[in-house]
Amino acid sequence: VELVESGGGLVQAGGSLRLSCVASGSTFRAYSMAWYRQGPGKQRESVAIISSGGTTNYADSVKGRFIISRDNAKKTVLLQLNSLKPEDTAVYYCNGLLGGRPLFSWGQGTQVTVSS
Image (cartoon, rainbow, N blue to C red; front, top):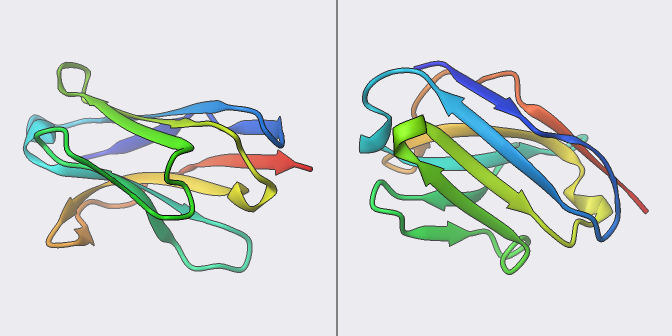
């Protein structure tokens, strides 16, 4: 499976962005999918997960501000980022999730920069 993320950019604090991840392969709908991010000098962390059935889970740091969704027909996972903060600045990646671990090779990610 190949993953291609897009939608990042530069935004002021309080603004919004919508990230998109398009996956190749026919087994997309079978897997939980997750958005991760890696900020400057930080480890990559999971911020949002959506199961194959649509159940969602969020990191405390983004709960109430980010919304993950998926469109299995389009093999796409979306991440709506609202009320952005400077600490949300990071490269955002998506990946499949199996047993709590990333499933596929990482894509290039998409840069989100939030100015104060």
